[in-house]
Image (cartoon, rainbow, N blue to C red; front, side):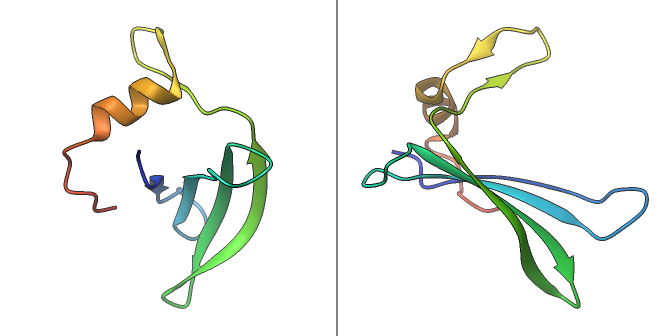
Length: 80
């Protein structure tokens, strides 16, 4: 199972931001989505949301389920 999925970006105005999706196998909900912003070289949590499911839509607009996300990312280097 995938440990987590992170998306990181630098907006035109404001500090660098990051979303981290983490599975919660023992939790009430399947996933958490935590939002961070970079503040003085440290990631600061600015929000958290509990999710029942995670999926994404690719450029060809085909929805991909959590299982497919894990399949595509397995074998990567795991770095952010």
